[in-house]
Length: 293
Image (spheres, rainbow, N blue to C red):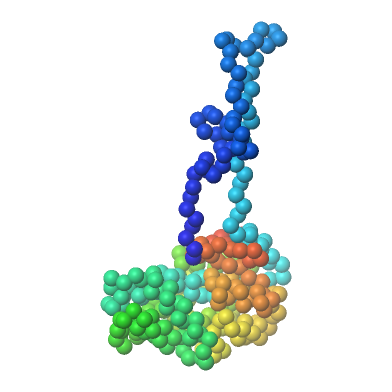
């Protein structure tokens, strides 16, 4: 995510800003000097006349950096489908903890390594299918190798095995319990079914119910490819117009869903910004509130 632009004082940018009671003009002319009088100026009836000052100029409001998100349309929606990791489960917190547990990464720039592994993973996802746990191992090993670091098999196995232990976001359970009042819930996830079931077990014990779970080991494919979306339509026996897809990744979910004609909501957990054409919320709790739960 790009770093925010450096803040500058509005007065430095706007020559029309008032400085210590002086009123400058936007056209570059010197401010008009007010007439000086030995005493107060009297009006027609002897009362002091009001002092006339140049009108204060207000700096225009800057244009937004991105177009405002589109309004959420839920008409005709029967199912709310979700990505899991990064939307329901705290992907960033979980993978950061998994990196921190690798001895070879001590004293390394962990956020940079995490971001690098994520880019490496995209190449593996586009290759012929293999289990996601293997992709986690391979992408971690390549990340380490690029920095001259050596990982043991135990390091790789522990990293891949940690995924079912990553916690849900604090709002996930309560928000999903509210959202399932608006329709059935489904999951489209890039992991194996056993991993997904372990991750969702705490939510399901609390009463969250999913009518469909489309996983990578079932379709032998990874999002952003379309196989997950096609399998969901077939299992749910619905058209895309009846499903609202909710996800925290543009690359894996929002962009391909839009290309396939699905309605979607971007859950901007990272604060990356929404963008034109995509309804955007910052959390599942915000989505539940917006639907009137």
